[in-house]
Structures are given as structure tokens and as C-alpha cells.
Image (tube, rainbow over all chains, first blue to last red; front, side, top):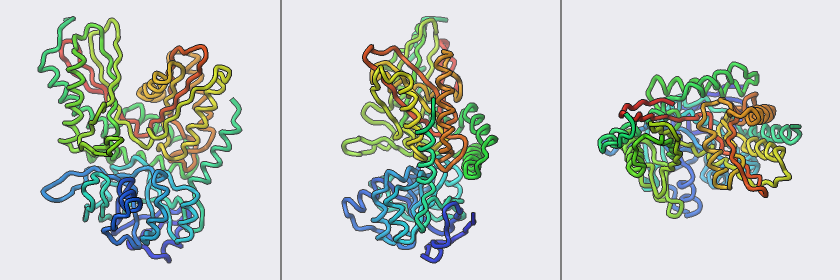
Amino acid sequence: MTEHCVTTPLTDDVIMTFRAGDTVTITGHIFGLRDATLIRMFDQKAPIPADLSGSVCLHTAPGIKMVGNHYVKVSIGTTTSTRMNRFTMGLMEQGVKAIAGKGGLLEDSTQILAERHAVYLGLVGGTAASETMQIESIEEVWWPDLLPECLWKFRVRNFGPLIVGIDAYGTNLYLQNKSRAVERARTFCF
Amino acid sequence: MTNNTWSTDRYDTVADAIAKLYVKALKDMPPDVRDALTKAEQRETVKMGRTVLSTIQQNIAVADQQNLLICQDTGTPVYFIEVGERSGVNPVQLERAIRHGTVQATVTHPLRSSVVSPITRINNQNNTGYRVPVIHWEFVPDRDDVQVVIVPKGSGSENMTYFRMLLPADGVQGIKRFVLDSVVGSGGNPCPPVIVGVGIGGSSDLCMLLAKKAIIRPCGQPNPSPEVAGLENELLEAINASGLGPMGLGGLTTALAVHVEYAATHISQNPVAVNIQCWAARRGRLTVKNDGDITIGF
């Protein structure tokens, strides 16, 4: 298990050094998005207002407060990624190199990530207090009408460690472990 | 001091207390859940499970020290109210106070508003909407207090909710199988280690409510009926034997506890419901005595 400390944007060379079970700590920028943001991008085909190439996209809808015209963090964590599984290809076409969230992605996304040299980075769900401390500021916000499901750009320092849950070689720790658990449950004798 | 009707001022005081309770519930984990998580970490032998559980412990500590929310999901506000027979409360006014307190907490803290119309997806930005907050009432003989328990119910776990009308011939065996498959089949989505709420019997609506009521019990407190408590233990053992583990990444603890609530049912029915609560099993309890004394706890 290797511990990686990386700075955004991410390149294919860096991504290919990540193996399932490694940890990654990120400094630079990450984008925040979730259901409503992705629906607007890919179902409603709205022009995407930010350059996502080489980026890390975190499944999140933060708690914020307004101080003057500025968005200030209150609580920023993550949400269940499988809900947004069908948007993986769309994000890849924008050049996204890492999708971050909790709970992993499904089989089709695992294949897409491998084809596109991208990874899934897992957070521990519910640990927003720690993550909020690792986010330095909210730098840009697009689509404020979707609050809290806007497109967010956060500046982060040592964000993580995140677990490489799906690597670019087709290994998906979530699905591997779940299929073992389901099999054990199936054969459990009450 | 019994049969005193609540004064108008008291509803205002309770609305303020509800606002405080909502925020406190989001920041301060109940001691029973803290203990269960600590025990889970101590007995965990799988490396990935240990990593996840120690991250969880660290997060609870950061929330305590920095006065931050445990999780950004402020949930669907769900309230369980017990009204004592001689409490003197007017339920219509109490419901209004709870709604005001929910809005007040959301706007003044501020909290993320997670409540939208399911048709238009419009968010009122105050964590309330048509028929929300969700409020469940129980009326209790021979008591003169009112207790309000808030559960800010996170959606990662709420989305992992299951219900089935099994057949009488499926028996308790069928119930066990359904609960085990539901929890393990949820994978890491509900943020394990979870508390599993199980409703058995009743009508379909009551069965689902019982599953939700089961998750507000202090973590690991057994059902008073020995048969039901035995079923809880058996289910807990089966779920944890799966090895699904913390966040679905492998480990000894998938569930911290299984809580079962049951009700009588129809001769031709065998209903079962599963409502899962994430490890961040937040809740707060407000007790209003008949003399107006208010205490806040878990």
C-alpha cells in the first residue's frame, strides 16, 4: 500500500501509479458536484462553465453561509456515488481524472475508468468535520440556483487521505468485497 | 402540578429549544453510539476496517473540538413525540413550534437545506416543505411530560430502505433472510457500521414506521422481549459474519446493532421492513416537564 501526495491537475502518468488500496492526499483544487449538477450538465446538456480536464470531482453538496457576496464553508463532506454512476462517461469526456465520493461505483464505471486512465477515490462517509478543515476556501461557484447542488471549486490543502477504491487497472475494491460478503450471507445458515 | 395547560410562552421556549436541539444533534454524537464505535475499533482486525474506524473516531473528535457538524447531511428532520396523558400540551401548537424551531436552526446556524419538492425539486432553503418535518405522535398514559426526539435522518442510509409483504409460510426464517440480504446487499452505501432498524408485523405503513422507530433506540439496547432480543442477536451475528465491514471495504463490524420492533399483524400477512441508520446515528431528546422545566439530552 503506497501513500501518494499529489497536486492538481492530475496527469495519466500520476494516475497509473495509483493501485487499489493505496491512499492519496490532494493539494490544489477539487470540483464539487452531485445529482442536480450532473443532470444539468449531461441530461439538459447545459454548457459546462468550468474546465474539468485533469481535475478531481467530488460528489458533494456543501453546507455554506454567505458573507457579503462570498460563499463560506460551514460543512463539506461527501455523498453516495453509486447514485451518479451513469454520469461517469460524461465526466471522462470532460477530461476528469478522479471521481471522489463514498460507496464506490459500479462495474460499467470500473471499465470506463480503466479505458480512460482515471480512478475513483473513496472517502469515509459522514466525516465532514475533518474534510471541512482540509478545504481552505470556496473559490468559485456556478449555477447558484441549484444550491446546494451547484458546481463548486474548492481550494484544498492535504485533502485526505482518500482510498483508491477503483484503480485504472480495473480493480474495484467495493465490488470485490461486496461480492464476497453477499456470497457469505447467501450461504449463512440460521 | 398536573393538568396545567401549556402557556403561549412555553411554545416559544420550546421552538427555541428545538432549534438548539437540532444543531446539537448534528454535532454531538450520542454516548451509546460513541461507545459502540470505540468497541468496534478495538476489536477490528482487518486493516481497511481499522483505517475507516479510526477516521470516524478522528472525525468525531474534530467535530467536538471545532464545534463542527459531524456530517454535512443535515438529513430529513424526523421527530418522534411522546405526549404524556397529563402533560397539558396542545399538539397543534407543539407541531407549529417544532416547524418554527426547524426553520430557525436551518436559517440561523445556517444548515444545508436538504428538503425539496419531489415533483418540482424546489428547495425552500429551510429544511421544511409540504408534510415535512416528519412528525410521529405517541400518547402515553400516566405521564405528565412531553418528550421530543429528533433524528436528522441522513439520506445515504435512508436510500437503503426495504419492505416486503412476506407470506405466513415464510415464517421468521423468511424475515431473517430478508434482513440479512437487504443489509449486505446495500454494500458501502449506507455508511457502515450501521444500526439496522427492523419492523415486523402490523400493516404495511405501521411496519415501516416500526423500522424507523427501532433506529432511535440507544445503540445496542435490546428489545424488552427475550424472544425479540434473541432475534436481534442472531441477525447481528449473521450480518457481521458477512465481512462487508466499515464503509463496505471489509472488516468485522458491518452493523453496530440490530433493533427490532414488532406489532400484531393479519393472519394472511408477514410484513417486514428494514430502515438503516448510518454510523453517524445522530439524535437529540427534549424533555418538557409539566412544570415547564426543559432538559436536552439524547
